[in-house]
Image 1 (spheres, helix red, strand yellow):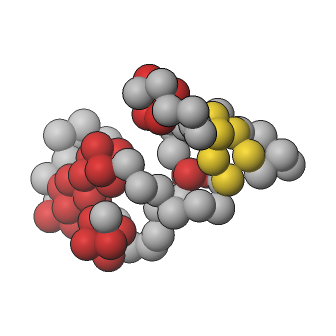
Image 2 (tube, rainbow, N blue to C red; image 1 turned 180 degrees about the vertical axis):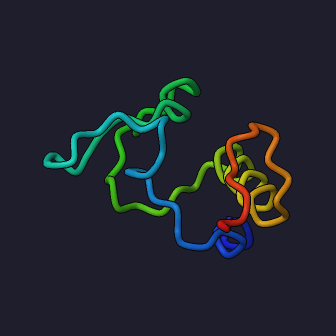
Length: 81
């Protein structure tokens, strides 16, 4: 996991994930990945570093696409005049 975290521009925490359903003021919430696997401890702390390989791999791929300028969404802007 540390290699995947290192490939990102900043650490990815549970609170940053769209698969985490915590409240900002509660600081704890359920992780959808852990819940789908029926883990007993699926509630995580929002400032816990993400340990879900699938999510980190997805984030790294998105970041690398962005860095290379290969945006498949077509939403990237061109250079300013």
